[in-house]
Figure 1 (tube, rainbow, N blue to C red):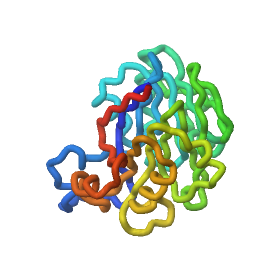
Figure 2: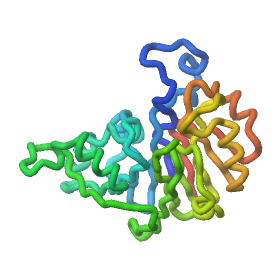
Figure 3: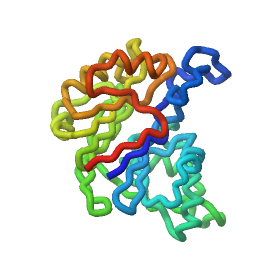
Length: 254
């Protein structure tokens, strides 16, 4: 299995105008963060987790030539807004893309991208096969996918475990029953928004505590606000085996 970090940033706390803070003006490419998403390679199959507003650019930047499925964590715009751009893969592959998400995610997609689901479709609209999932494991390309339900304040959000890789974003609390699903992962990815307290996201300290509780061989933080600080400075503070992810980071999980 391979994992490529397409984006490690967040819309939370990001200014809508040019910002001259240390992070936003940094010349270190590891401080340049698009909205959070990963590309998971399972043999010849490509899976994307979340299609945020930067999805099209992320696919072009990484020279992704085919897409087999999309998994959605939840329905917030910074995780779904780029879905329209799967139409390029529809055309190239000559078929629909399989989309996996909870019922509320599908309802949001049907509202936001209504034209893709109308009885009479305009030529060229995205072709999407919706597959409703719950917290129950399911099979995808001969691999078991284990959904992990976390709470984003009062909103249920899914993380996903595939083999020894677990990806969680937008978490504030995780029930013990869900921690059991994560235990034993070699690679853990989890959100670490900022240092200050936040109602719906792990802070840096909370993310470190969660990582130490799980005890994965390697943990990477994602969904990072510019408020967290410079990549090189924050990573220097982190305990052994815990890192800040960055856009373009490649992992191979055996």
